[in-house]
Length: 85
Image (cartoon, rainbow, N blue to C red; front, side):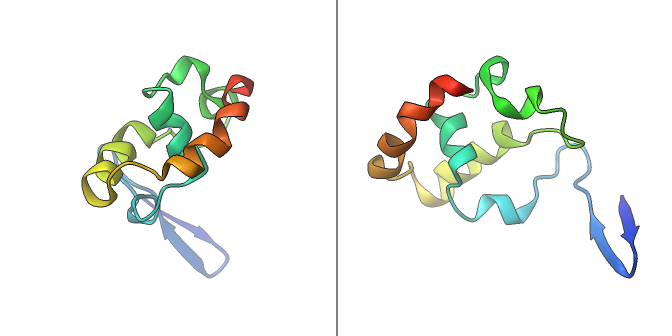
């Protein structure tokens, strides 16, 4: 679905499509999803009332396949904050 905002157009992923921009690197959110085994009940995205559907359950497998597991240093940095989500 294309949505116009002034003269800028962006395309929203349809159904099973995953946005390519979020499958290029391990973001903090992707690492949190990886560490919690995609436990959506304890995630900030569904609780945040965002206007989009979380795609992390699709993104994490792509990241694992293309990049491998996230760096342990980054995972350890985020662990203290996981209880907040």
